[in-house]
Image (cartoon, rainbow, N blue to C red; front, side, top):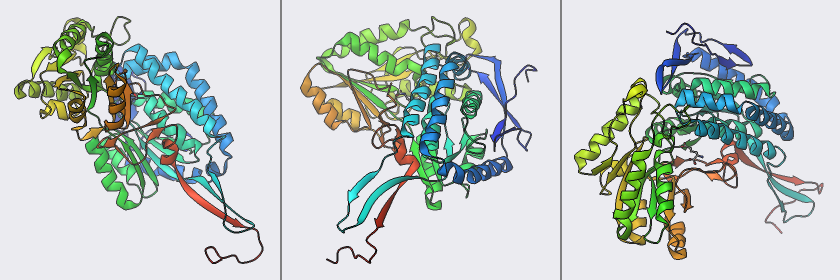
Length: 498
Ligand code: UN1
């Protein structure tokens, strides 16, 4: 263990504590595993019990704190995040591996969400509806659900926790937050800043640990009222199966197999640029990553040629270096999983046109790098065209026409994000209408959703409510509707009896 490695703690009821287990987890830089980012507690059941107890105790006073006051605290958190954006962005890059621009973007997405949800403190609006009876009024109000377990992944170590923490808090819930054990230091820094903004003790608790132990125990805990999870589909589905019979509110944001359709009338240079960013941004480690590029047969060869040439030019490296285009995979297991998929693609008969190997030249051997990989002539039945890979690997598939392209795109268990490149208004309109996904992009890749609109997908991509802002967004996840009929007629009035 590196002697200089900094130690971090859990936050329970406003106090930073070690685990009663004394066990720890080490967080490493995936671009250079000799760089230890920090050591965090591996929480025991007792720690989780204490965190849940603290969240339960804090719920009533927090629920009764006026929502605009809750919003003001979140506004201060936004300001603090912005002030610390550089340091936090660099930490995201060091701990998770994404390139620095994206590390900064990760923090910016959290800032955006904080400002947006701070504003919700003065909205959280319901409806006022006329009554059929005199001297009676009817309205619906949003009420918080209680103590929430928030379980988040490593690929957006600041943004995704922020997507959950801020709407949960502004709505009046309290939180026990269990971040990924691969990016625990980013999570700790985020919680430190939110705490500094003035969140009362017990309202936001942090417990580190693994998904299987800490995450499962926390989410099924009798003191937890709701669970919001982002991660893989198998884990999300298992979690939902465990929590729903216990009467908990559950929302899961899960995998994707997101297609980009490139039509014969598209601006090909733009489509190539979009497919590159969609496929290899964040080294393909986004649930929105473009992993199927469905290309009209008339432009197939030309597109493939341009795309493969551009992919070969991408520079792998440490995300902190300015010239790097693509960073490492987050850890050894993820790298192995992606390399396995590359082997599967070859065995299935797909044509490897670039990449396909672990990159070990020079300093790269200190980390988990895989060359940006493009498979051509992929058939929709192949596993590489069906399963989520979560790495820098994309499949190019040929389509006959718009209908065929949409049918291929929709032939998936997933339905998070999809995209079409076209300059023909009919192609665009048909795709907008018929693509079976939560998000559709036109002339833009499948990544880069903005926080003021609901985020999430259909089929195996999502379960429960959507994330983020807008109608149908995260406020639905973190509140229940209550309807209030107030009769001030001073007599018994009977509805439907007139
Ligand atoms: C994710 O990959 O889990 O739309 C979230 C995007 C980002 C969020 C991705 N704003 O790609």
